[in-house]
Image (cartoon, rainbow, N blue to C red; front, side, top):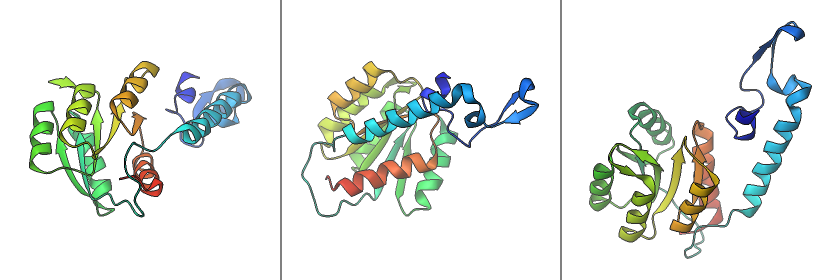
Length: 185
C-alpha cells in the first residue's frame, strides 16, 4: 500500500499473485487497494496544481539544451543519458560532488538532475552551490530517500522539483516539458 501511495507502483505496471483470486492480477483489479490508487492520483493532481514555477524571469519560450546528471549510479546515468540524448539534449554526467562542481565550472547546464546521496557529499549542499554559481540553472532533486522535510528543504534552497526513485523516462521528460511550458528562465 505504501508503494502505491508513494507512486512506486502505478496502475498497469505490475501484477501480483493472489491465491484467493486464482492467480495473477493487476493491483488496480484488487478492490481492497483501489482506494490507495485514487488517493495517489488525487495527491498528484494537488501537487501539480500547487507547484509554482521556479523563481525567475518569464520568457516566451524556454529552451533546455544542456543537462547535467549528478548521480553515483552509473547505470542510471547511462540509461537516463541515452533517453535524453535521443530527444536531442546534450547530456553530461558527474558521479561525485567534486566532479559535479568541476563540470559546472566548465559549462553551465540549463538543467540539473541531482541525487541527494553521493559518495563525497550531500545533494542539498550541491544544490546550494549550483544556485550560487549559476542562479539561472534549474535543479531537480532525484532520490530514493525523500521525505516531506527534505522536499521542503530542497524547495527552500531553490529546487524546481523533487523526483522520487524509481522514476521512468517519461517522468523526467514530463518534468522538462512542464518546465518549458511554464516559460520560466
